[in-house]
Image (cartoon, rainbow, N blue to C red; front, side, top):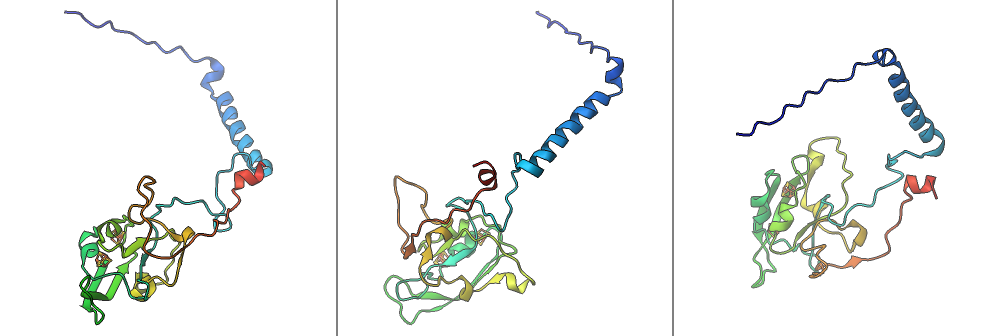
Length: 206
Ligand code: SF4
Ligand code: SF4
C-alpha cells in the first residue's frame, strides 16, 4: 500500500517590522486614500449609480409592476380563470369573477375584482407564465413606495392597461426574448427609441 508523503509546512518566522504590521497597515491606508482621491476628483473608481437622476438600462425581462392587458375595445383580456391566482406562490392575487354580458364562445367571465398585494408579491412572474390568455404581463416599473398597506394592493382599476404601452415599459411577458420565435404582444406598443441615460463612469471618462 502506497502511503502519501506528508509535507510539513513550517511558516517562515516574521521579521521584526512584519510583527508590528505597520507597513501593511500603511499600505492598506494608501489603497483607501487612492480610491478616496480617485473618486473625489476623477470619479475613476465610482460604480454607484446616482439614482434617481441616473437610471440603469434594465433587462427586457425585468419583472416589475403588473399590467392587465385589454382587448381592442378596452375590455380586459382576463377571463377570470384563476390560473394566475392558483400558480401564485405568495398567495397575493385575489380574483372574483362575474359573467361577461359580452361573452362569446371564447370566454364567459371577466374579473369583477382583481387585486394583487404588492407587499406580498415576490415578482416571480409565475402569474404571467400561467395565464392562458396573455392577459397579465409585467413592466419594468419597479419603483414603488406606499404610505400604507392598503395602497400596496393594486386593484383592477390601477392594473388595467391605459392605452398603448411604451416599449420601454415592457418587462417580463410570454415568450419574449426568444429571437428565433418572436411572438408579438396582442396589444399596441409604442416603439420610440429608448432615452439613453448617461452612465456616470462614461460621463466621467469620455
Ligand atoms: S409575480 Fe409571482 S408572487 Fe407576484 S403575483 Fe405573480 S405569481 Fe404571485
Ligand atoms: S390567468 Fe390570465 S386569464 Fe386567468 S385569471 Fe389570471 S390574468 Fe385572468
